[in-house]
Image (cartoon, rainbow, N blue to C red; front, side, top):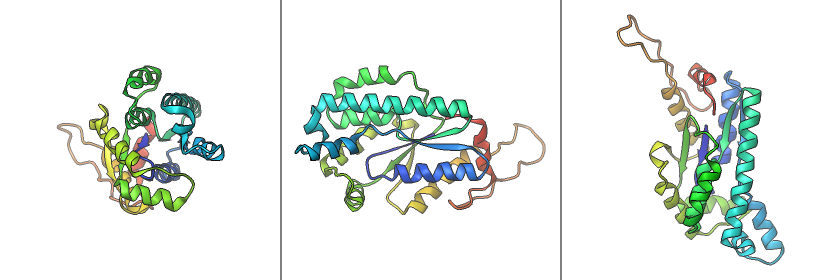
Length: 228
């Protein structure tokens, strides 16, 4: 499963939390960060007197480096999770690269990136954490480790919404507290993997009790039979 969205949407926090919750309830899961290197590229850029990664590498160079680094990270995550028979909880996935390309105005590169990433299977479920650009900007400035402009954050929101994969995303309102966002994710998973009665079967299937982020309940064990 994958968590995607603009910078400042809370992907890393929620992916860590989800992997821990799944593991705690009997579904071995591993957190994987599939970043494209923007944060450390930004640090390098500032050290050499450049404004940002794009100013350092140029738009084409930045998108190329991002694409390669993210591809390698995803390939490693999928391979190791398959070998270990664990659910992969992906902090970013291939669609993040397509959105980055669109947000940077590099649409000509998207077809090549899609061909490059075609080898990767779609996640069983992709959560799009949607957050207001102003709130994302506030969070980024508060953590103080990197910087994004409001213009780029707004372009990123539009990029995710424009992707052909968007209708398949589970959109989560990520403007609330981390606990509220986790609860929304867990609620969706409990509903998605709730046991369903066979058509015409006698009797009823025991309901999976609703739960908050601290106690997602036995319904999460249904995910054990699914791969990332």
